[in-house]
Amino acid sequence: MYIAFNAAHDPRQSPREYVDKYPLDRIAMPKNFIPDYPYKEEMGAGTGLRDEKLAPWPRTELAVKTHRQEYYALITHMDVQIKSNFLPVKLEPVPTSQLIGYDMVARKYIGRNQAYLLASAEKRAP
Image: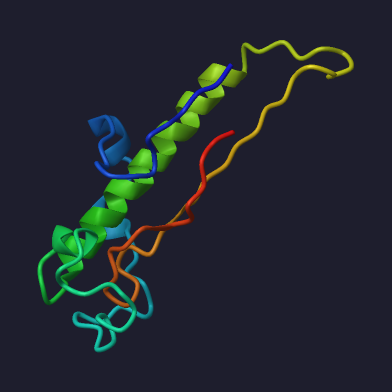
């Protein structure tokens, strides 16, 4: 069985019930947040980059919290889907022909030093 989840990549869409689990007033801002990071161009996350166009410049607390809320909801929803797919799997007593692997290449930078870039390695599933 091979299952490919879109999470945690754009578009960050999950059912409303998962978004509601993360009220904006309970989402912490990153400690290193600043509205306009002075080295954004040098780090390759300038205003022209697609991911960086997902929020206003300068960055706002509402934008950062909303994007983090969407990300948290997406990961929670994906966790539930993974559980629902793998709990019914009956593992062999001596697992000789079964392999369950999980790989997540996205790294969450949303709102850290104003970056909205979701860095990911160039990996592909086997």
